Image 1 (tube, rainbow, N blue to C red):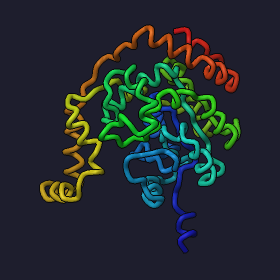
Image 2: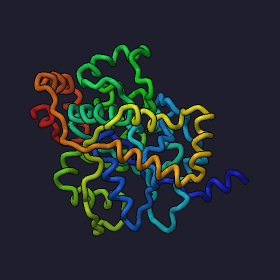
Image 3: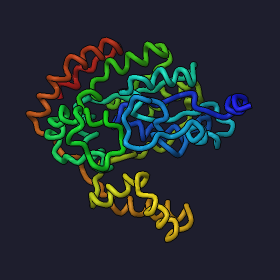
Image 4: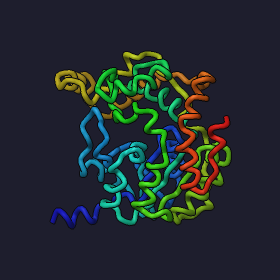
Length: 311
């Protein structure tokens, strides 16, 4: 009985698996507007990737499937969780869950990606070392369980910046598991400068009407928190003591009211600005470090990415 109910439930058949800070949020929003595609409101459910070390409870299968039950007659159902790419298990777990799934991978200059990821983690309270170079130097200690952010919720693997930026093994894993023809690669530079074409190509890959256009407004610009205390509170709500949670429900009894309150608090605490600059010597050093992996990735994709290390 339980199996027959599960089979009838709607579930995703394509996955945007990462990498982080490569345009996945924007693509999620653009695909969500397509009439033939259903994308849940929740991004980053991270149901798969059982090896990722989160600092919060994982969602149950029932909760995960509930995200997709509002789908109607759409031809495709998808989700986006950027930790799936760096996970060593997610590809196999997705394959077991949906054997004919399509995979979308978005890649960006690794030096720029980890610099942007560091800023994002600072904003969400998942990083507490404000200087990027110092955070890079802390990787070895963090592998030993030291210097970890007190209010971290995101996967511990996100703090291993160098590992998450070495794409070739991560991409090859998905090629091996799903077959090259079932994996669509998007280069961030192409997505940024020719968004309409990349969107059209992605719709073609998903076998839906590729003539549909959306307003390609900027999604997820650079931002930082006005208050680290408020940021840590918002990031750690799920781990608040039961007494505090009960008090919150008494003061604001309706779920919708609590959501509006938290959303308003997050909006107030968010300030947008221009992106900071990386130290020139640090950039050059990281370019040299990532050169072998970029060369390997270029051969794997049949796409020359050497310009990433010449900027």
